[in-house]
Image 1 (cartoon, rainbow, N blue to C red):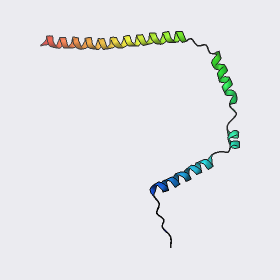
Image 2: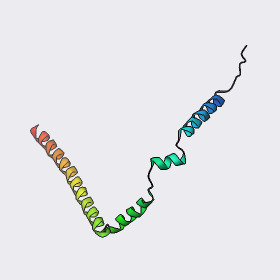
Image 3: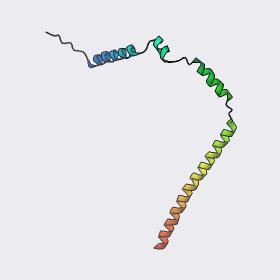
Length: 99
């Protein structure tokens, strides 16, 4: 005869999660396999730093351009709202005068 053991759902879930985690850990490559799969990238930091140093930045020009574009967009937005409002008033006046 088989014995029946009652365990809580939480305990069963914990055992299943541990087993799943162990399977995933077992499937990971060893450090030696990892080095074979992926190249050495230590020189990339130096190359990126040098490339960024060579690039000239113009923070004042960038700020002025952003401010100018913001003002232009706000002006266009204000005029669009104003034009819609004027058109609505004009249409309402036409409807009132037609009666």
